[in-house]
Length: 502
Image (cartoon, rainbow, N blue to C red):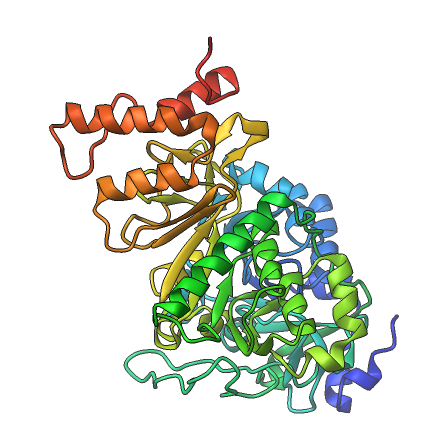
């Protein structure tokens, strides 16, 4: 067994050190199990793997609750063991995605800021077990999390039993990087005393009654973070469009010279756009976001960032190594909080956060689909994009104008699934250009989105659709041709391309 005695303080807690297999036996069929992790960072590995192995020989299922997506040792292994009955709030695992799109897992896609308080409200039943990855445990039971916080504080406070997985591959240098604050629930909730992204309001550990800790499991498996796509010309173009937009906003007096706190979603496009800001003219930037990816590290390395607040470190494998190799430098700027704080809509609005998220597709009127492929197949989930978009000072969505080698237009007559309505999004950006639709009526928005954001292969057909819709609806406020609105998606499912044949 891995020696973790120097990371577990006190004889009483050290007596609870056991194997992953023994800890997994403490989880019962039908349990509601909350685990740490937000993206494949800071999630338990040994206990979920042992639990999946137990399920293979003695089949049963649990409800799995997380902060967001987690690594394959949890989502993947438990899915392959047919061990997940119900799953929320977000996932990115290929096996899990296939299972939930074939009704083998009941999946609930949720706004990430809402989950913790809804668990405390009892909306989903009791929290039976919490499994939390930690750097170390204090003698008073305080759990120091590793590379993410997510929903862990609420899982710990609400769980009947707590299993702590102490991961010795996570450096002790992470101690002090967390700001743990769990609010009271209405009607007793106080305002969050955060006036700037870097303000600390809590403790650097998760409080826990040591009597609730039923097992402590050693682990030495590192986070398995996802690689990010190379920053290509399209991503560079989007970055430049946004830099030019921000410069105009500063010139017009609508933004200060150091902008306002920035939020960026998960994934390669979002990361590339942020990374481009490292070469821009803006300095003394602050970050108030959920995930901290390579682009945020680029900004810190460039000396452009003062404070960077999030709930998870989610860089690429190379980025994670860079973080560990320079942790003393990064720890001066980075603060990890629970997701109900990092993603809090009230804080986003009060701080004036500039939100930058990624769309699967958006339509000519400004509705955004960020979750479903062709309207039916769940990709990952809404994540934190909804928390920020509706409450941002300026809300921006980015995407490449086409996908699948040009066979899919990311700008369509009408989206096949709506996550963010036309009322919530103000700026759209593709490699083709940027459309600022603030103050524009639906038809005005449509012309601007088509002109500035659509790919040339699809621009004329979008204009033709819009003008026929205006004519046939006699200039309706939001002109839609009901028999054609989803015809582009239908064409793709039938022919493999949205392009007209012949």
